[in-house]
Image 1 (cartoon, helix red, strand yellow):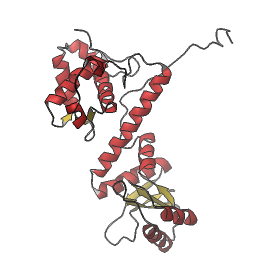
Image 2 (image 1 turned 180 degrees about the horizontal axis):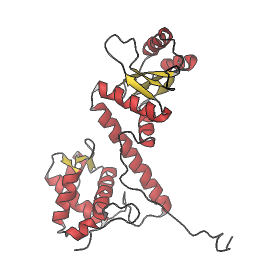
Image 3 (image 1 turned 60 degrees about the vertical axis):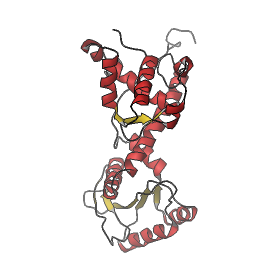
Length: 272
């Protein structure tokens, strides 16, 4: 058969997840749906011309986002989905999948941009979930990888008990004369880094004769902490800024799809 439409995939995925309420990998969902739609190997191999990704898999990922935006399913962790309470209780009517909510099909450029904004928002939420679900020492590694990528430097995680607030460093030159010292705090949302933590970090910078310090947290900073950091020239990176930087610099993410939207150049044809 031909490759199913976005809405057909949404409906089948929703039906399956409502009947099977456990957590499911997206790779499992893609394979299961291909069998439900009785797709041939040739159909599954058809690629999106713009990014060389299988069309069917591409549509399944878009269906995932559409169902998340409707509140019917949730991303429990990276590349996993499960039904929500709302999804279990909502009556399934023909209109449930009739609106173009989160689909790439039939979008104008402006609508597509809004769709990408939603995708980006969900991606960042998934990254933060992955960070909070990991270990403290891995969070320090994330911060090191990010700072090295941004500065094109090299560094090391040094944090241990009694480290005085220093979790690692990044050398900005080959001799290690110019360097950044950093502190990483993996806190849940609502648990803000307070002013004493900033002051402890400041003290550690002075003992190390360092002039550049970066304090990173997965949550946020209290107002007194922000003021102290500003007064002392310490760079603060909160959770929202952190995940944005990770996406921008390809830390912990992979490129799944890439699209270009073009329009006629009226100037070329002498119409402007």
